[in-house]
Length: 113
Image (cartoon, rainbow, N blue to C red; front, side, top):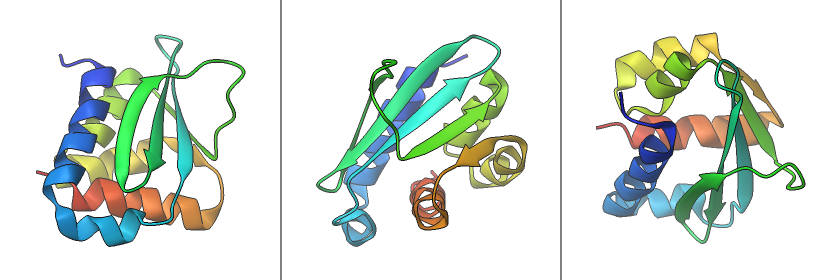
């Protein structure tokens, strides 16, 4: 199994390779909190200036979107396989504005391998 942190870093790497996606992330400065229920771990993705950085989500930091689910669902969601992503998306809970949810969905789908 690849760790969640590594999967989140890979999303950033894939985004950098697909330069046409800079238009999707341009001007979208967001912090996305990721809560893995079965391991009680918390991660965050920060999208800023067309790039993505990942790290541990601290309690005091706010988030614009919160993605919550089990470890297996998170691995499927962030793993980069489009068909598996579609299944995992139905199994996790995403809280936040609809616009932000749609942007995240577009970024994750378009950065699939």
